[in-house]
Image 1 (cartoon, rainbow, N blue to C red):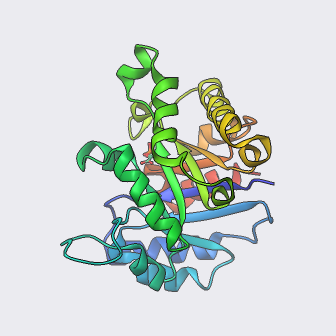
Image 2 (cartoon, rainbow, N blue to C red):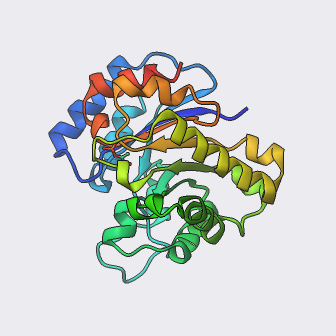
Image 3 (spheres, rainbow, N blue to C red):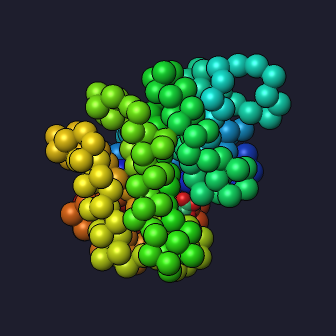
Length: 253
Ligand code: PEP
């Protein structure tokens, strides 16, 4: 059975003390999770080591990276590799976040390489994708999303999908306060699952967690998460406050 997941993307926020204070608060607040639920935070890479250490005393708080390079090592100043993530006990990574696509020119073909590098290291991929406003308005959003999946992920074997989580994030809803309606989220998540089914079959498609991201807050999380094909959320702004993040975690139940 696929799991429900709430993952916090801290982006480039919080200094060392703030990151540790937030992690300690989350560890103190997080209760035992049911078998089918997961909670994760994705701090800036400079904080990963200390956040992993604090989270190791928790009831299941997982820690993921926000990005990784496709090479194992080498002359890539400023980058971090999957091997480095692994060596700090980080077993998941966000790939393809819209900010990486927009500001760092990451495209589907580069992301395909990153996906392969992460999976080869035994790192779970949380693959982010979604259409920009113009694509929704000119009604190409289903095609855009299908291409983002096909070009970066559909070379994988069915057996590799147990290490892949999808995070559909319409770009027009990220950090804007404008969220997709529960119906819009469900419509796209059902499309994503049907594209997966066409390529990999029902059993594989039914096992993949598909998260929604884009201005999820405590007051809208429950309704979005209750859609049949929405398996939790990737949370930006609201993951920086313990109270808000934990309210969103509670909305998984
Ligand atoms: C994100 O950055 O992945 C995100 C969903 O941000 P926000 O929740 O702030 O819209």
